[in-house]
Length: 83
Image (tube, rainbow, N blue to C red; front, side, top):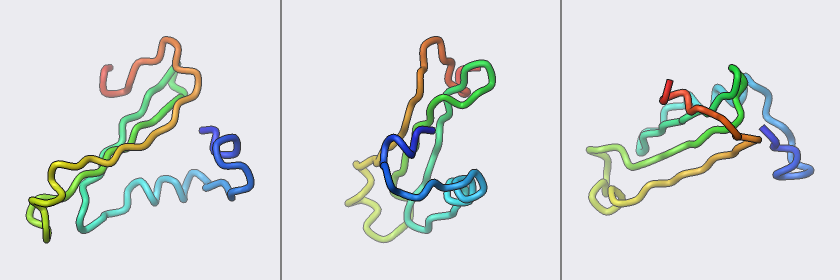
């Protein structure tokens, strides 16, 4: 959303590149993404990653969750999973 503000000087990923990375299959991890919208416009997102069941060392990694995200102005936002 505001990548240029968050990490000045870093190249911006175009929409196709972002979608490609989002849909990428990771052999060791499951990934989920939640999107917040206001009037149809994406104003934030939350990514979650956790160890895929049945992978090597699953038990050691299973208690951990990696999360990341960004948000614009979310006043009145309804997450897409809440609609």
